[in-house]
Amino acid sequence: MRQIVLDTETTGIGEGHKIIEIGCVELVNRKLTGRHYHQYVNPQRLVDPEAMEVHGITDEFLQDKPVFSQVADDFIEFISGAQLVIHNAPFDVGFMDREFGFLNGYPKTIEICTVLDTLALARKIHPGQRNSLDALCRRYGIDNSHRELHGALLDSEILADVYLLMTGGQTALLLDTKDDKDKPSEAQLLESIKIDPSLAANLLVYGVSDDEQEQHKAFIEMLKGKCDQVLWDK
Image 1: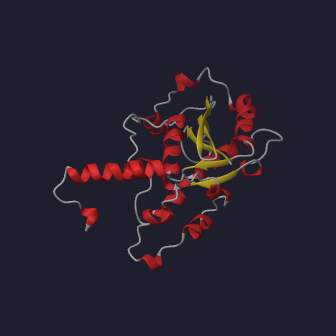
Image 2: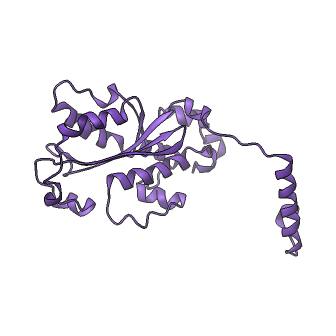
Image 3: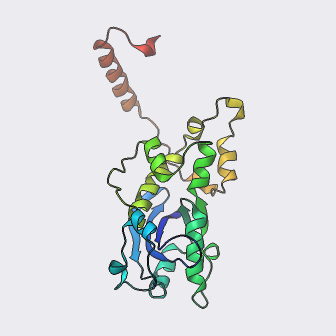
């Protein structure tokens, strides 16, 4: 299964604003391949000061960058046929579709890709909690201290780590409802956010060899020798 973790930066929010940066990283069968797509775009309009405070991209920096029509074909070639993994997908897809709509004969995003919204996923797993990318990094122990400003490629790399941890087969442990009987099954959760069912088939399950079991037993005996009392014998 090929997935593209995607993020964009824009001149602002709302009607009339445009994409100024696209960042994508590729996953195949839940593994980072090292392939990525990264492009700055000249929006042919000014960046809102509020947006500039978020991503730090200036009008001067964008002046010599290509306009969207010049990069659209390469961008489409990179994402076509994949499942897009996006945090707050309606925002980014809305901007992408607006840009495609300015060009004659270009498709909408859902005509060439499927889309998974990791914000919707996080809200299912952690209801009632903060589910921004920064909050999820703290929850899953991902170091994003190098993220002083938002950047499309950096954020897509961070989101890839978050997504893989959220969907790593530990769903039941991550749900925050107190009563087990109220917890949806993993199958129900995945279906509710429209995750491709082939995802589960691509999870790798490793067995433990006899030699590894013996090494583990020896390690446990060594730990016992260093402690007066061990909890796992109780």
